[in-house]
Image (cartoon, rainbow over all chains, first blue to last red; front, side, top):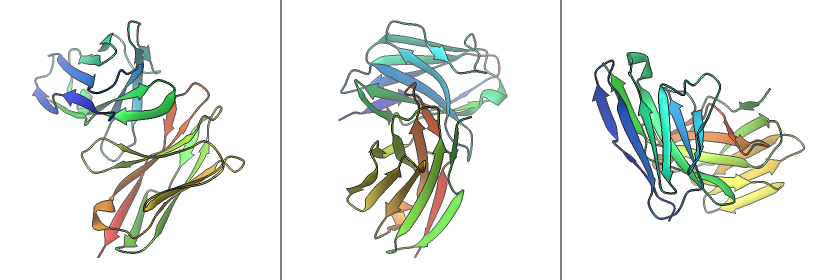
Length: 115
Length: 109
């Protein structure tokens, strides 16, 4: 149980375009979903926390107009990187939490390369 | 400030035992997590400690001392597939995970 999927797993796009990443909890309803970014050989950096039906809470330094998060249902959250630039190239990982249990279950990640 | 410290890299021999230490300082405490992350993949959950003591789960055990702000992950009977990064994360009073930079574990035959 507690499977989280992400799509796409890998995307290459041109600078200036927008990229949408989907995160789905497959066999449970996620009360909260998290979006992380990880640069090579670095730890996870929390970008934002989202709850279904409400606005996401962004971490300091993360531009909410650039990284749009939509948590449409208890099983789906999307992250849209708008007007992507090469410095946005990174490994984006979502995770989901179930109810009161504090552990997070991670999706497989999306590797974004902006040319 | 909030801070998680763990060694950057460790090397161990197949079949041996290795202990990865983690010290934490967070605003409030709601538990200590260990995750395993293979290169190019997302982290997978290993353990969660919220009370002092040792939690054993197969070849992996995790220990917590809240008074010392200290945890360790103990891996026994090491296998080559255990080569990965091990991430320590503390959950603060807002239920946010504060992540360490990870310990890269290299297993040699």
